[in-house]
Image (cartoon, rainbow, N blue to C red):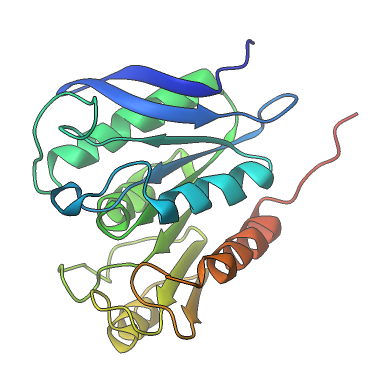
Length: 216
């Protein structure tokens, strides 16, 4: 398999989807898809939180795909309020699992991207675990009764203006395990000045749930 790191395009339900993928050395045994924040407020796959999530996952041994939802950057189509974007995510999952058959899959998202990712990660059999950063629980209605027995990490800023920590605590308490909620002290929705703490938490989570096996 040739190294596919760099800008790519793959087919989606609304047309061509623009992505950026980074592989590591050796055989890919784990892969991740990272979803970006709200496109109507400037969210793209180049958002700094998305970039840091992708980087720490790649450093943890994942081949990582981040991509632009429909109508963003060079992705075709138009914004669809989170509905069609779920189909875009499914196309990204298809691309990654076809590219890396047998690899363990993790789904991650920031803000709007976490909202899009959440139900898909719970329902999609190919996804082993999920990471939600800046989960906008105070802006959208989520069903805590959804069956989701996969490992789940929620990382939230103490001062998050779109997902109040207390709202998120109540939501997470109602979920089935395994689950983990981390509140980053002094951080706002965008983890300004606290991105290093975010990546530390993510690295510890994936180390626990995706232990590295030494390749011979």
